[in-house]
Amino acid sequence: MSSAAKSIYIHIPFCSFACHYCDFSKTADLSADLIKDYFSALTANITANLASLSGELETVYFGGGTPGLFTSEIGGLLALLEGKIRSSTEVTMEVNPNNLKPENFSYWTSVGINRFSVGVQSFQPKALKLLTRDHGAEQTDKALQILQRSEANWSLDLIYGWHDQTLTDWKEDLERALSYKPAHVSIYNLTYEPGTPYYLREQRGVLKKSPQEIEANMYQLACQTLSANGYDHYELASWCRPGKKSRHNSKYWDLMSCVAVGSGAHGFRLDASSSFSPGVRYSYPKNLKSYMNSWQEPLLEEGRRLLDLVLEYGLVRLRTRKGLSLADLEQLAGSRLSQKLWSALTKNTKMGLHTSESHLVLPEDQWILENAYLREFHSCLEKAFKDDR
Ligand SMILES: C[S@@+](CC[C@H](N)C(=O)[O-])C[C@H]1O[C@@H](n2cnc3c(N)ncnc32)[C@H](O)[C@@H]1O
Ligand code: SF4
Image (cartoon, rainbow, N blue to C red):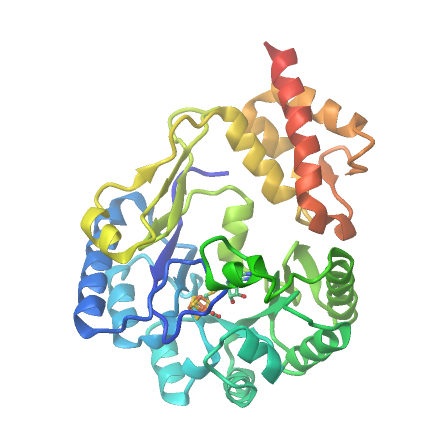
């Protein structure tokens, strides 16, 4: 758990269409002036952060929005990090299926992108229409063929739990995705985020969320199918072939410092000077204009306590194969408090944690119920803090 940032997240909010379920910082306004102004602000924002990136970078991540809409602009941003990127640096870019053309792909790999994350979501025409995606399944097939023929390390995203989706629909999506042999697969349960057109339609009863037991069956089916195909389930929503974990996302799950730039981006800095400190979480406004006007002053999370840091650790680790580590907790919160928390957690029969001397792990089929377990974790943590006073 080092405090020096060796990772950077760069947010590119432009999309050719704003999908109705999406709550990320994004815009479908592709006017040349807005794009130019945004990339200028991003360039200044990255430059101002160069000093806080220590030495060689381990991971760079272009997320969106749709970074795949851009070529030379991405090359320009990577040039700012020259000298910090090595051949061992994982450099990921999110792309939509309709961005992946042979000429774009050659450009991206030539400037150092060595990992691609493709937003497939589904291969079913009815789902693509329902999810308001602006690509068809044939475009996805073509894009995935380009990746399959290349040497690139790549991942794909699928969404489950959409209106009226059946288990058969889901099985077909999983099987078609696996036929391309991706190195990594992420699956997301569709959420109806307040403020999105989807949310309004759900409130009006036009769209309905899949019943919980169907979603649980879908998740189980993904666990079985991916494991039968040789994928390691290492985090709630993430599976990989051996050695192909997302190193960037693992930084979040290991609570490592990560610089973030761009609209809606969230960064984290562990405090180098003091051990049991809550660290600093910061973010930028989701609105592009607000971001461009105020990137010099990110919003700092006020009133953070050590308890918040340990709670975050519980939140991310209860949904991973690694689970909670005593050594990590001691580093975050000191040995006395950690021992008290450890003892409360091992005695908590509701959580049913698998215990070893150094790790506590939630059974894989329970990761999906993380909120219930987080409540238990929280009460154990509050008790440990009280006993420690
Ligand atoms: C914000 S998108 C950016 C990547 C790319 N633009 C795309 O659409 O594929 C990253 C991933 O978040 C997931 N996502 C976005 N909104 C979601 C929602 N409301 N529920 C579940 N997953 C969502 C999608 O699977 C998507 O691949
Ligand atoms: S899901 Fe992806 S393409 Fe759709 S609006 Fe969100 S970021 Fe853009």
